[in-house]
Length: 417
Ligand code: UD1
Image (cartoon, rainbow, N blue to C red; front, top):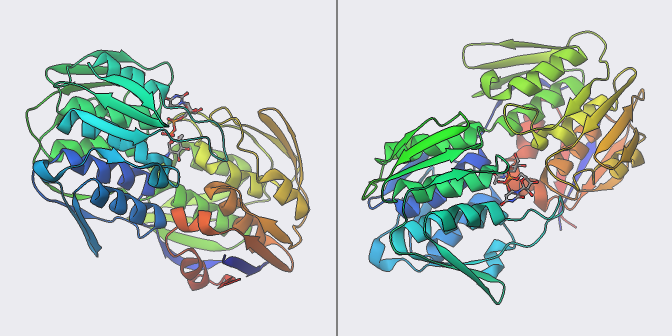
């Protein structure tokens, strides 16, 4: 298994281009199951999770190639409605084929995803919503078996604004008979990007980006050409990279509007940010100070940036707090940061971070995607050498991480073990 070796304490300077969003591309790729013509997608990042999704699409009987852009063709009579456990267990987002398969074929056999490093992550809200649209489900040998005649529009109120649940229901409702209203829907920009893609294919969706989304079902969806939005979490991670190393970066292909809560907290910490024509310039302004952060559904502070801001806060003056309200087990990076000299105490959902002057390089173990990112950030700032082990998590979510960071001066290399 590869590891990353980082010689830290080097300010990062220059320009970085933010890739297309992984979390937007995954549902959009699975939404292609609904389209009767070929779909051409631009700005899809080259990542392990994308390759896994293309593999899943091929197992479901679709044509799927990545060659600069991605072309997906899902011909009705070739579709096989089965997503096996071997794939679903490597990537939870596979469960997003449930809605499209039910809507297009009236049947779906999808392995139930298990727990993951950051928590139990059930899919009950996805299933309850689809049931309201007329689907029935049984659990057999670890697989969810869903069946339906044509799905019927319904009024669905989510107990929690689940991102994946909203996406599954949006896809299902696009081909359902009649109107579906999703209340307390997720407002994440990736959900909006999916709805915009579905509309480009001929769906009739309104209200995306708000908590009430209305979908008028249509009989068929066509293929389309579509550009995936920039990755706001990758962008946020590189904003922190500039500040934590006391450098200066210009991020291209990055919209501050999608990063409001992160930008707000960074400014509160003393970071200087300026939006340019096609990107954002960032550097440390004054001394950094600790702040209080609570993760929340969009437009609140994203849980996917919690580990990264913690790494930064660990080097701020004074103390700050972080409350994680989305996932129950998302502080796995804390003990690794502590190995590098951070002073962080966790109690339940809360972490108290007391700033230290410097991190000291150490071998550390990555436990999930964003935790890995926080360890890389700490390594970039640390005195001495940091080894980040188990980096396959990073390959799932950050396109060309070492190449991009090296390009702006980081001393980082991948070593095969
Ligand atoms: C997506 C993102 C993930 C991000 C998360 C929260 C993708 C591929 N993943 O994950 O990176 O961290 O949004 O912004 O886009 N829940 C239930 N029942 C359900 C569904 C969710 O109880 O049926 C709970 C979860 O356990 C969790 C919370 O709701 O506590 C949020 O989950 P959700 O918004 O669904 O996240 P994902 O779509 O899995």
